[in-house]
Image 1 (cartoon, rainbow, N blue to C red):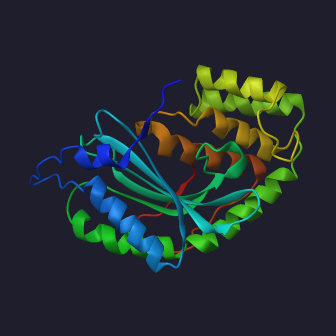
Image 2 (image 1 turned 60 degrees about the horizontal axis):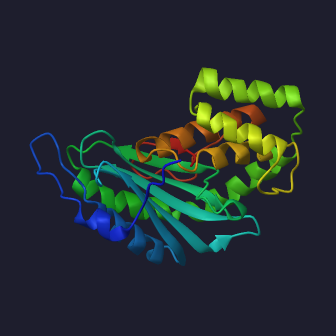
Length: 252
């Protein structure tokens, strides 16, 4: 399985495309600096900053884990996606990283925003990111509640099979190679999530299989995964904060 982990310096070296009347790029460096400053302004303590990329840095994701918003199982994670080739809109999202997986797994997110590289994006982004990150602590609390609800839902083998089938055939956010990983995890789990045969455990098997997803698909596939498991649990997600941005549920 291909590894898309990328050093910060590689993203900084990727050439920024020229601005045109209809296209206004936002640099990876600007997103890094804005994210780190907003984390500081919100009173959070950075744990790790991790990057993945493809197409020689033209597509990139940033993931920032927070040390002082955490419990024994997971910690707050803030993520963004960006592109220099017009293939992806700028998108920002809040989620969580599961400690035991050590794979950047994100279980949920609230108030994610996305914006095309047009119009006022270069002035819009700093304000939106700052407002957005300020609501991250409350979002983490809600994700904790969702986790506990999913742990209480026990699945038999038939229910597991039906959910996996829907992920592949209906929702299409996992592929055959990831299916093989999920099957292996069901038979012989790599990690103990302390919730055997639960919906939460199946969710973690799924995100574990997605840890090397191509950077161009990483965020959207995790958004789809989180929504899928919320629906399966009968949970309804509501935005935590509503800054002047487009709201959308995310999970990574």
